[in-house]
Length: 177
Image 1: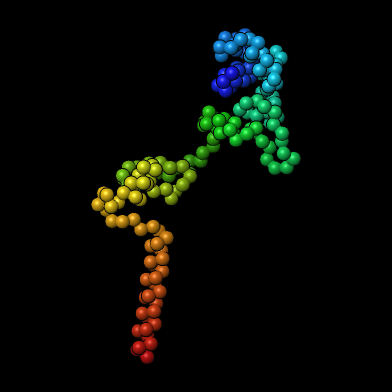
Image 2 (image 1 turned 180 degrees about the vertical axis):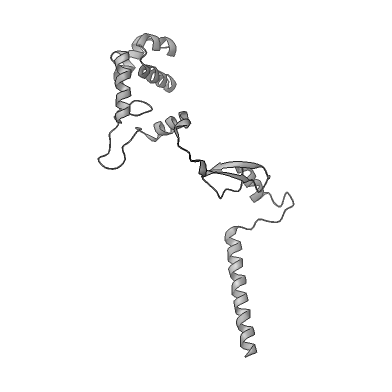
C-alpha cells in the first residue's frame, strides 16, 4: 500500500464512507482497507466514526490531518497535530484559514528589476525574487555595474571616516591654540 492510498483511505473514512466504496476508489480489496482501518483506529460504522472523529478533532484529542491520537503536554499550548509533517501538510492544504493582517502587506519595488511586488510581514525586503537578489549581488561586474559593498563594510568605512574627521578636528584645534 502506498502512502497516497493510505491518506485517501483516512480521508474517505473520516467522511463516513464504507469499506467497499473506499476499496473501489483506492483500487485495493475490501479486506485490505478494513484491516488498515482496524489497525489505525478507523473501524466501526462509518457514519458514527465520522461524527466521533469530528468531535475528537474539536476537543483536540486527535490530529487534524491524519486522525492519530495525540498525547497532549501537561503544560503549555495544546497540540493540534501529531507531527511536523502533518502540521505542514494541513496548513498547505488549508491556506484560507490563516489570519493575515492587512497592515502587514507592504507594496515594494524591486531594486534590481524595478518591478512592483507585494510582500507579507517583511517591510525591509528589497528584491522581488531570489533570482533578482543573486543578479544584483553577484553579477555586477558581468553587467558592467559598480561592485557590491555590503552594509557592514560601508558602516565600518563610515566609522573610519568619522574617526579621521574627529582626529583632523582635534589637530586643527590644537594647532590654532
